[in-house]
Length: 312
Image 1: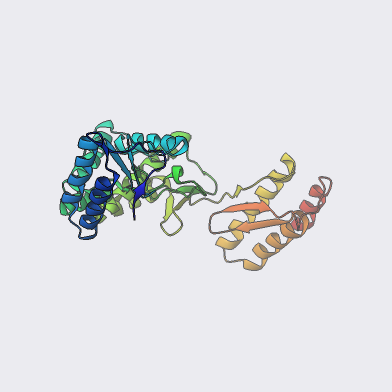
Image 2 (image 1 turned 60 degrees about the vertical axis):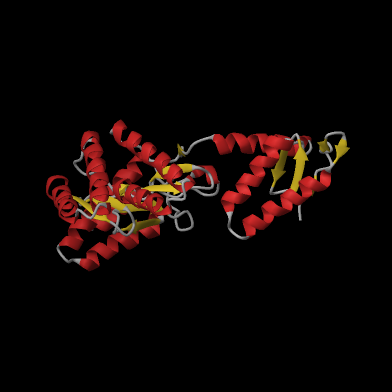
């Protein structure tokens, strides 16, 4: 049930107040909406605006001559009107494409989808949305009027996840240069988009090139990649000295060779010794090690002694 806003002027028909006429027309609009006759409902609303200068607020369920619903709500309506008149824009957390023309293509078709929805051509709108998702991994948020390559929307608040198609490097770089790392990242992104477009032969070729040229292995389940190297990378923060870190790296390299030669007892001895003395935890899947503060308890002076004890 809609009512007249307490901030509204009276409706004057000639010299006579006729608020009942507006109430009747608003009820008629509500009836058309319930019957899903939206064109007729919109026509009634437009008639109220042009003939009587009456605005309707569906959230408050009120109508007002001149559109006054109170200072606070008027400010909210002004912001809402600006938002309603704003087109869809790229999210600040969206991934970027190297080709500016491709981003222009996305924006053009996002706008075309909006127009298709206004024209109630929902089949075309759905085809555009599906095409953008398959070709560019674009997700559209209609509530916020945003689009994002990778599907992340930091404007929604909450904890930010990692966009789809973004792979994190784990472990040591091995022999890769910074330029190689950039190339690998681009190849992984190209492979992801090839898979999205169902070009599986191209995706497999990129995967094989990554392994043969850069010794890079990809884990699609965790969205991670690593260099298949004998080196282990230090993860997290700790209070170890440079000498201690060098000692640990050397012992982990020895452990790697023991494991490769299937000398598992020797490899386990090194792992257990590092854990006991330094609180080291080793992740063999990603080739990383870190210090567990609950297990650590060694001083710098013990490094040489530990080295000698393992070598014996």
